[in-house]
Amino acid sequence: MDSFSQRTKAELARRFPKKKCCMKAELAAIIRASGSLHLRANHAVVLSVSSENAAFMRKVHLLLKDYFQIPSRIIMEKTGRLNRRYYKLQLFGGKNVKRVLTELDVLSPGLDFESGISSALVRTDCCRAAFLRGAFLARGSVTDPQKNSYHLEIVTENEEFALGLNYLMNLCRFKAGLTQRKEYLVYLKEADAIGKFLTFIGAHAAFLRMEDVRIIKGMRNEVNRLVNCETANLGKAVRAAMEQVEVINALKAKGVLAKLPVPLQELAYLRLEHPEASLRELGELSTPPLSKSAVNHRMRKMLKIAETFLGREGKESSKLKD
Ligand SMILES: [Zn+2]
Image 1: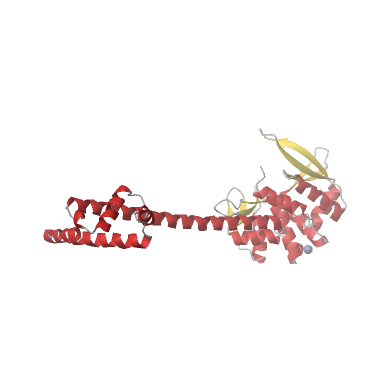
Image 2 (image 1 turned 60 degrees about the vertical axis):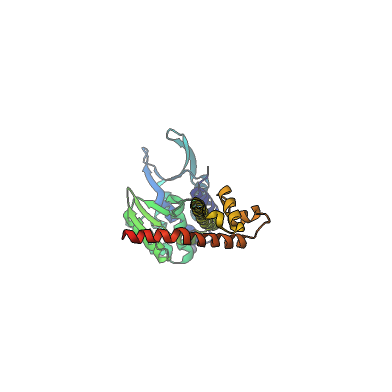
């Protein structure tokens, strides 16, 4: 089944940057976040990027072709007990690899590896968005908005790169956090920030999906609140009916009930027969039928009388004990 994260990435993989500056920024982020260099036995140098996302691999392939006019190869492999499919993009040749790494500011002219993010790559908003999109595509994930808590993260083993990403996200006004577990995590925790981030990097469908879920969640909470409220009211009505039954039984035991006006007696017996009925229902059961307010009025009257006969007595006896 497709997760929200996978769908978001599939959407981002299809979003192709129009400007050269953005192609470069996105490629640089991808290579920095998930590229690896291999030296083969025949001394051939290979730059590779792996992912389970075929559309993402195709995008990297096209970016390399469009920006550098360098061909790359994609192979499919299976891994682990579950034989999960993943794709590996390979770019061959020392000259090609060096050119790509140097132009993307991964390799400095002195052939050192750059760890932070070169500011030249992310001067403008369009390139910042492209860079973050690349990093998210390569190593990011976002939890399903259906879950209770919101979380988006980009992982990396490299501390400098994590610091760079964190800086860049905060530069774009996302209040990102940075933490270290096995790897470094640059993350966002708030739904609003995550929604804005998804929009910023071009995942518009994912953002809309998230908003839909948030609206439904909000409605569900509102419904739950109302149901709880209703249940509380129901509880109140049940408690009141039980009290009425108790009072009527006490009046009966004291021989008071038979001395009450007939309409009150009738209501009292109706209540004993239907302890679970609401006042409205008691009204409907009466002959002739009574309105809810009429039933309420009679019930209050009976309780008032009961207070005179039973309540005061109770209060006095408690006074005596003092
Ligand atoms: Zn740009």
